[in-house]
Image (spheres, rainbow, N blue to C red):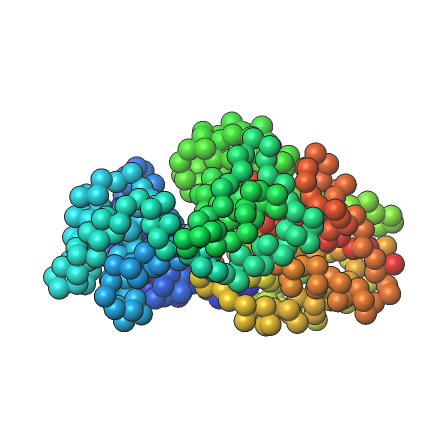
Length: 485
């Protein structure tokens, strides 16, 4: 769970969808993200609905917007070479239009004249004639600079070469490298060719050779590969899920499927809540907690930070099958409403409150703490998160994560099990949190999480496990399993 807890703000302007074009809708999303602080995955469906686009144009708008957000760092480096002033001095609307045009020129199969012409028309409509002329001049310089690799060779230089080339903030590149190294290096798939080192300034590479032994380049590339929607059977059988149009079997979770064609909201089963949209890594966390061996009672399950409800809905299914009660705690009322919607009718209890104070000690058999985190393991699905987060967030989240984990341990009865998970591989949000808490307590022990996911390979040396985009095709997930003594 990320710490994205506030509700989306209202749009500050009428949607550009009045033009009812894919580029207009894509611009609207960039504006919503950069000006209104919206989350792309929440804002995009509304924008597409308002624009009334055809399925083909809706897919194009999504690729334009998500691709531009994903590659924003590289595009800003390119534009800095083509604009005769600091990018920070440009009108923010113009900068978003230029990023959108750059994405089409260097990273899509759009003819250069069409990319420039359509983007200039968009600039004229959004900002005016003068900025449109500037957009025309700048984008023609982008065209003259060549394709994506030519621009990478030109701008991805120096100590930030890898960060620029893969469009990640440098602090995230450093964090991912450290997380991979801590578990001994995550292997690449055998059929994936080794990536050549990026060339930097003349005379040698700007980074150490990235032949693939630690998987860092493969991981960064995976962050930039659009992920197909993953589905989960919440209140229907897996056979019924797989019978839906455009659906293929999932890879790891027994309740998962992948949507190969179309959008999730086009499926009635998604709209009515029988099927959820949930990454397989997230599903596996809930499955691991349900699989953990337990002695004694197994009647009370708790999700201590339940919003928006994906893992809670899956736990609810398992709890119903075993006759257990699920209690969900969520601090924010609007997210608690999302949990209730995800759970649907049934035997469960959703409470609004602080998880550190909401429940008495020693009351639960199984406890899930999907802790608030930076969410840098989910960059495939949340492309804007890499630019919205900063190392300063770790200082705020760290004490909260430790406090919540202590609360989760207190809630578990002696013999009960606790799952601590994050959608971030950052060592400061994962290993160090667990180590710090365990160092100060004698009433809890780590148990090996890997056997709880039989058939899933390359989970690390244990006892905690990690899932990786470039290995498992999931979001980057961390899971530590603990047992109360």
